[in-house]
Length: 168
Image: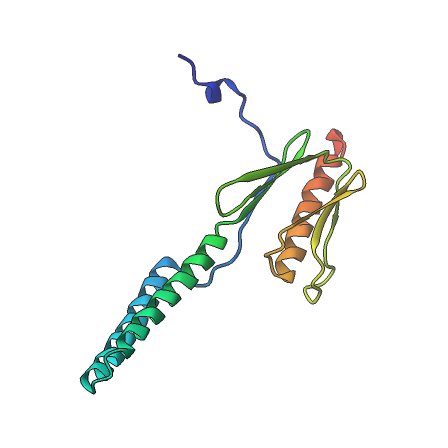
């Protein structure tokens, strides 16, 4: 039995970028923060228990649960990713939502126009335009990241469009 993936030629990408939202707290940091919140809630709950206000202990447990749930939702939304890949004949944009659903757009690289903020002070979106349609990508990036990514993508498209004799 032959493997279908092995039969297909490997795609050569001239540009291959993965865009993901930034999360400032690592998994280890998350667990350390949860341990700290739990310890504070346990000590405060114990103090209230000692003075006879035992119903308050449940609210401290609820606080820990809500902080945990808020961080889990934040990390779940952080699983969003956008792949921008340029091959010989197409610019492929793949958006992977937090549930794993993939949406793809295929654009002709010769017709794609990249519009982005000119400076890092602007909140303008990063757009790809082709044949009268626009696609906003990298909406989760900072303005400075959008400027840098747009410059890199423009450079890759410019190099791709150059005649073969002009390529290095």
